[in-house]
Length: 353
Image 1 (cartoon, rainbow, N blue to C red):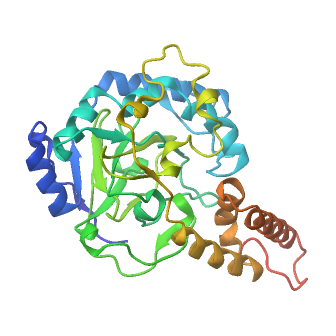
Image 2 (image 1 turned 90 degrees about the vertical axis):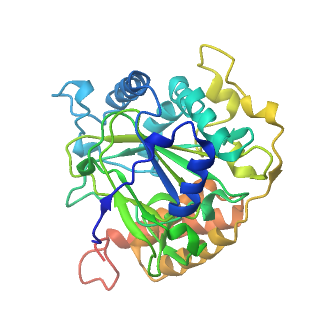
């Protein structure tokens, strides 16, 4: 593991958009203390922990507010047993309002010098503690290959206090200047990990509720292992100048969470629904060439019995618009599952390969 240094704190620049923009251009990231009100973040944490507990993700012997994970229920996106609980978390009204909080939109408007578009699609993550039998630590990757469109910036916010040992994010400062790097099939977010030397210096730090990490779509980042006993919950939303093109995949709900009508069905108020329509975004197709390359690698790996292709295949089944590819991925998943239960000495690869 590389040496991980401390974040450079940019909190003193909040309110100075040009200075923040210059630091983003220089380092590729901003670490900001108290961008969001602590009590509002903690309220969302409380709501999501209650839903996680109802889904069996928390240890029933411990108070819900402690967030102690039920390690026997450990699962990950995009597994169906994960999605069954995740859907209720992602559609939470208060969670959605955090990413469009006035503090956040004002910050990005100052950086961009124009109105900011908060992408309707965002990610909410639930990372179980690392163990010998379970490890879903996001590897080094870039967002550009997944987000497309014009240059965008992610904002990563842990729900509640999050020391390093709970699995915070780490970014490679300066790596954004190298452009899009080559990838391989990976088991973390998006199923693509960087496969070439990574430029820049790794930095990270402990977060308190309300702190935020902002970084560009070509800044390489990864998670540190969750070595706590708690479920690490966070969200990462993305922002860009409203005048710039946005890829179509960023305008729909998270895969598996239904339509916007279904997402909004349980909301108490209407004022944040379809907020992006007032900005008349210029929507363009996602450049899927990166996914096509990943998927061909995953197919070849699976055909040779490599079970590390499983997560990429699950993503194809859940999210790819090509029916033929989805069917091929389903067939290979069945083959991998069959290989995994073959008795030793049968000549096939086991799941431990």
